[in-house]
Length: 183
Length: 126
Image (cartoon, rainbow over all chains, first blue to last red):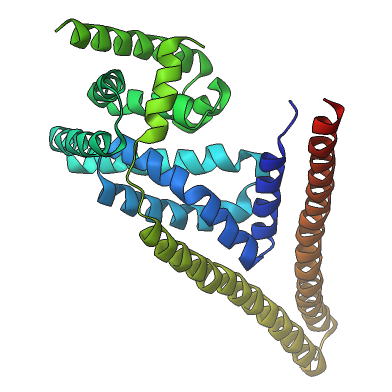
């Protein structure tokens, strides 16, 4: 597969960081911070938790970046670290319902600000209703644009499982949206 | 890609209250931490091993000078050689890792130049 200029540049930053180039690492953090935060936010539903998770994840990335053999794997490796931290967080907290309420509030606030139309709001609401692992799947696929193989690496499950879960999740989303529209 | 997937892409891209100022603060902290802890830790480990190896060499040399029998002398020579070879192996290991990364870096820079060249040529060709 032909790599884009952006992907190659990212790999170059990873290699330079492995060599101890401070500027390259600074740029790498700048490039990935927002994406990693957004992913953590989507899974946990809490802004403050997402910041904590991102910070912890960077600790993990710092520890392991020199051991990363293939710079091209950086994105899926970094997301896997964030995903694991999110799972730890959700296990520790045992308060998904409370977080979901916070997420609904956040989503409504934001949708008011950005004039998202009604169907979009319904869809976001439907995403919120999904289990965290399904939210992760949808986010990785439709926000981050990872392919099935990369998602399988991040979530640590076989590709077939990713495909079937994604299919089920999309059907579930469709059902929720249709049901809401009919109400 | 169906409508639902396109809609999903759109709404997921719109959502999220990312705080740029907090991000900048965290970024500085992370980079500082990486530089202070990670890089310094590597240097400290390198110097500890290096000084241990030199210590072995000095100990081996002193032991060799004070040894009274052949077996003792050979043991101290072996001790000296282990220390001596450790310093060489450490430098060699560092050189191998650094060379590997330098080659990879050069390759990526070349790939990047080719990709940039292609992206410049494509609009002209269209």
